[in-house]
Image 1 (cartoon, rainbow, N blue to C red):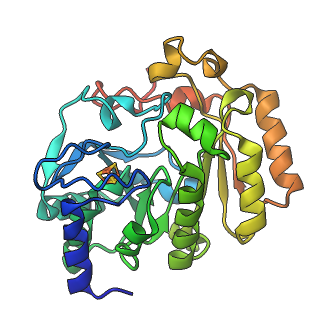
Image 2 (image 1 turned 135 degrees about the vertical axis):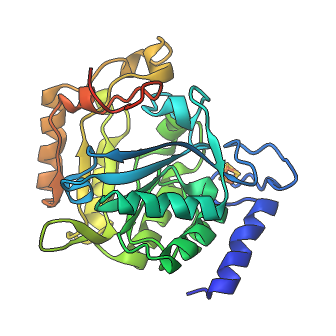
Length: 316
Ligand code: SF4
């Protein structure tokens, strides 16, 4: 494992030529280069909220304190957070490492069970010093790295020992659909290597006696209508290469949003049916994946945030 001094240096050097995500664009972010994700030299935060809609071991009764970052490295045409992760529908704020550490401690003081870093990949250069600082100032709750799973192994190694829980998406089973729906190449290999590295660092998810997550890997997969995410390939890979103890959150909450609601992708311009969801649950079970978090289909309503409202996740 890297020592603190080297880790801080290497994280900071990413600003001179960034390779933190699978886009590997190499942008000199410090010099004002235009990166694919739009990230510059400082972390940009779009929203901070205590969220009760994560998987039960993450939210518990007190919620997960989520910090939503701007500059996602994926451009998903159906992104439910598109107002803040891709477009500038609400004002974003630049954070220094010390401001980010203060925000983490504020959320902990509010009583949340876990601290969630949402779409954090491009902001690792600020997150590494922020996490060291926050830990030094008393941050003790588990830190959750909630990413689209398009992280490079070299980027993730900068977080080894600083992150308690990895919550990556495994969005697609083939590169073709990743290119069409998220605008990236080489998603599948990048994603699988990232998940293997996450497992190496933290192992499968473990819970405390109250059922709250303490440490480990929890994989998410959002099922697209018509099997368009190549879900069978994703589930089959997990069944073959991940230990049985690693839970899979099989999400049914898809609803057409952003560009997917504008007629450009008619094949995914509908919600999932109960029959489709039951089919994929049965496939997972048949492949031996019994550690599954499932959802009600109505969750499409609950998890459709509107970030122009004061409380984006409250249903009207
Ligand atoms: S995180 Fe952003 S700047 Fe870094 S490689 Fe990916 S797209 Fe480029």
